[in-house]
Image (cartoon, rainbow, N blue to C red; front, top):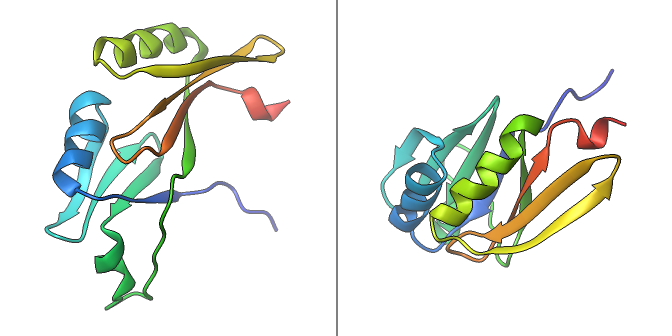
Length: 130
C-alpha cells in the first residue's frame, strides 16, 4: 500500500476576497468552491488549494474543526518549459520574487509570497522524482 499524492493543501487566510483576487486573478487558478465568510477552493492541476478563514474552520460543522496560524509554505510544480514564463508572469503581476534557487541536476525554483505572507514556490517538474 502506498499514498499516491497529497490531494489538497490548506492555507489559513485573513481575507477571502484578497485571496481570491491573488490565486484566481493573479495566478490564474480555477475557482472550484466558495462559501462566503468561510472558504475559497482552487484547482491546481490535479490538486486542490483550500483557503479558509481560520476562525470559521475552527468551529467545525459537517466536518471536524481545524485551525492554523502563521506563515506556511507550498510549492506549485510546472513543466520545465513553462518555468521561465511562470517566473515572468509572477513578475509582471508585480509580485516580488524573493529568491531563485538552483537545486542541482538542472532543477530551479523561485519563491514569492501571497497576501498573507505564505511562502509560495514554483518548481520544475520532476524535481523530487530523482
